[in-house]
Image 1 (cartoon, rainbow, N blue to C red):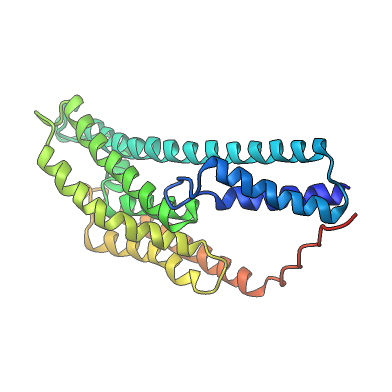
Image 2 (cartoon, helix red, strand yellow):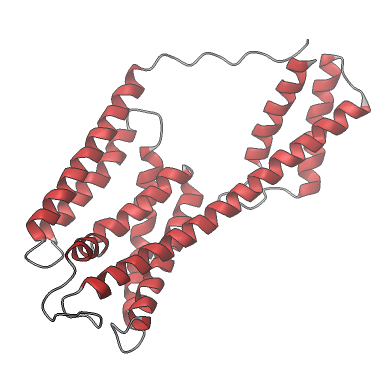
Length: 273
């Protein structure tokens, strides 16, 4: 009996996962999904010899709870993306405002806050914002939701950056034209980086190519489009290049582990007791 119930729950969990479309929407109505689940469970019950009403009721309730938990997980993922995007834009703006040698909060003109100048140089680089979209794709794993979440997160980051610039007195007004410009960049760049993050997470040898795109982009942007004051630029660049090299080695190590991992064992059949 125990193996039968475990098999039913496993099938139900897979069914709950399959109920979501690209953006997290239902593929079918709740009533149709529930009816289909009941038909499958009834067939399993008949095959296993357990067909009592209490057993069917308990299993259906358990599957409903699994689906509800997954719904809450999808909603949390969207909120986390929005909050992370807002934090990226806010911290980028604040590090620039409070660390600048000529900002509204500068105590000694020409002398900024050293560690904030480093943070501002990193967060103000294109690679940091591209890496945000790549990370969203890596964590999301599915192409559709990854693209939508990465675009949403970067759009929120762009708006947050310029609103914080205005709120902290760095600009005299919200620069709408720049918001539109960088939002258009995000609409084109975020999907590409998110998809690279998704494919880099795949458990196959080709994922290494997608994974290496991130450290290559970081290195190229750091060397060609250096950001920050001249007195921090050499050290800032070296730190970023070392981090990019470490990230590349991590992806290579992951590829080696995937190549030499033992084959997965087949799942045990959970039919009759």
